[in-house]
Image (cartoon, rainbow, N blue to C red; front, side, top):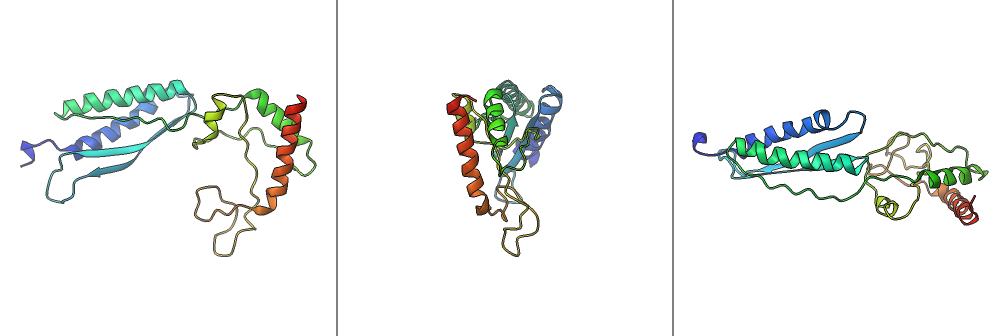
Length: 199
């Protein structure tokens, strides 16, 4: 008797689709943003309409303003769309990590310091931004700084059976290249000296 109840699975499906319009229709197209529903949990039996559904996911932006906008739109859609189907919604928007935004001055200092280290063969400064979450973002909210990546090599250091080529963090075949540790130390020393000397 589906006509006697309110189906949270159908409503959840509508809400997931509605959420996908936030980035494409509410955010400015020149400001990157990602909104992904990554989990849906509802019911325990195949022949029973459940009494509730839980959606979970992640939002990534490069600015707090865009994050604010997405939260507002998600809250509005959750309340109003669910009400249109006779249901109610509770939304929790937990802000775990702010965007990692380098200080231009500190990034320039690090770049110049690294270029003076003979063992550093390349300093790339025009990498595309990434939506990865990073603890260092909290520090950058209080002090100017720069988040840097060190190259991990071409993957030749990894043991047999883990594929070919390099791979990044959070990959099951990731293996830190211990041979780059001395280079990392030299890089940090160069940046530290440049900062203390004001160059």
